[in-house]
Length: 209
Image (cartoon, rainbow, N blue to C red; front, side):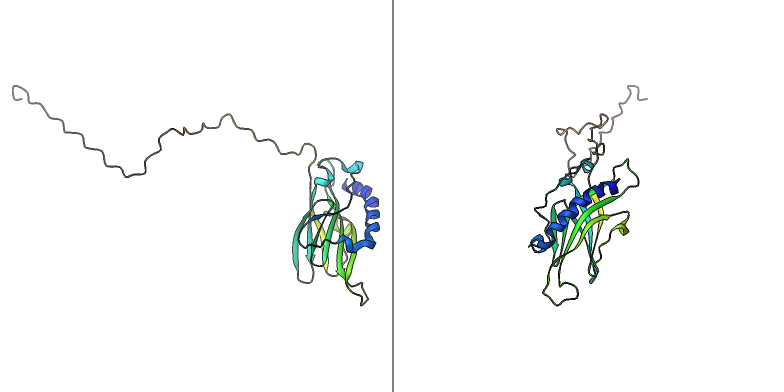
């Protein structure tokens, strides 16, 4: 199940998040609105190497700004980060249950950084890591982003498992043969009506009958 695989990842990624907590300023991309690769090392654990390799998976996340009600979809691969003005989303991993596992679920390990004043202070704004952990699609209450302005949730983790590859389309043997390119296309010019056939001349019989 994804939750059991997610728990395998959690200690490792939590450690990575803690190591970077004092370097939040360097974790924020300079450009806004563009997904950029980070220096995060992607490690495929034994329980997460089934199906699409971790580095090739794509997580679709929802981002909400509670102040203006604006929402947007964000697509990231593990090891990428994207910035929107004063908020940064970093994706560390994404998972989903295999078709033979129940109950179905999808999850992503996300870090959320916000450029703001530390709560209860008058200090200058700085980048703060306000969330770091797994988000689950079917059980969002298991781990929520608690921030007064921003919210993030997972919509899907795009990956495939063995046997899920799209079938190769085969050409049917019953397909109609292609039209002969040498065949004369009908002319678009106006056609004159066909000439009337000459009336048959009735021959007179010798006896006038």
